[in-house]
Image (cartoon, rainbow over all chains, first blue to last red; front, side, top):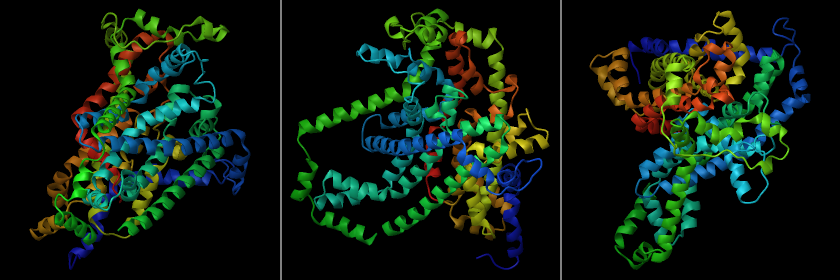
Length: 290
Length: 323
């Protein structure tokens, strides 16, 4: 499209605008990323003897890493579908003409902006062995549960994750729902479709692109739950919520850079693979919907 | 599209047909009101779930130290409970009291005037967050313009790299970042957090989505009038992207005000750390001021959220559009 004399300028111009960002990106992200990969292949950053995949092999033998890996995987597998279902449900509740709709929307998104650290005390007091939740359970005549010091801690982290993340995904779903033309539903009703058919044949189908994105965001945010876990339970939490990030942080403090970088790349490879795969599938499905 | 219009036409051809009427009156009146009650009840329950930590922190910040002690001692007194084998029987649980017996500003007095530590930490958070918000907004606006409105070699690949980096957890580049910060002499210095923050790629991603919605014809018209790329950027792109930029600023603010991982690693000096870490370490004995500190900590984000809520929604919505 660009013609004549401007062509040469135009080849340089974008790089001028991109320059500051690219410079910082290269120095603070790309270079560390590549160096990190290099570290994962040598015996130590100082001597730098190439050891191939040795660090990775050693990592897969390491019980702490395997524990962290399986915890992270379990958590992601449970929390992502739950987050998606609940945020879609909430979006559907708000996707109607009801009084105070905007107020509810604001309320549901509020946890997103609240710094985790400022509500940690509340969560702790809620889930503690002598906490509020147990007082309710006790009042109902059941045994107290030590939420933070047993495998139940997974539930704690799950609740905190959902509390924070439902709002964001709900907004995404709401935007997606509002993009579905009303005519589709009217046409379906004329053809005698019931509510369930409408939901499965129209709503879910046309939400596919949004759903994919929410899926990716939920996975990414499930890795960020470390913040909550760390603030609520500290460096070495109960075994079932010892996440990959705890492992990496602790390896960092132990100066074990090989374990850390190779663990980091296992995680990075997984993320890239998931995202790449999802976007391919999504593109195919979007094409079919047209 | 055509299919859709056919359907619409079909609707118009049969105005107020029987089918249509019967559909309108879907379900009897009583079942309708039952669903409505359920609907409202669910919304109210969700509201309680989402807001109670917030409301509790706020109201408890006006309680006296004694009242806090009475309500939360069961949780605080770890030494007692762990040695007391018969916890169940002791029947002492923490309580959430939403309304203070007596409203007092004592906690705020302690936090803001008596002890200086909190204020220092608060300013640390400000010093860390403000440069990142301003820096990332400026850098990202420039870069997004390049990605959205120019064609150049390697554009798509580069953008893919930006996205990949955006998705990585902080820990992935931790070690090399730490070593680079060390080489640049930035350890224990706010710059070791501020620089990576400024060049975070989320802003570029978000604003590219936004700027792509600006019609090329605007730019072409300006070009015909003899405007250069810089003029186009300043006079068209930036003004038209205002709400996208505002959305980015508020999202970056929220994210960085809340930062935990970076200061944990890069700021080993406890007296340089921001509020987020301070609050998590508040000693059991200081619970009396913790709620005031928490409330003050969440105030800036909460206010800016209420002020710029629509921008935030726009920002979230934008993040969901495919690039």
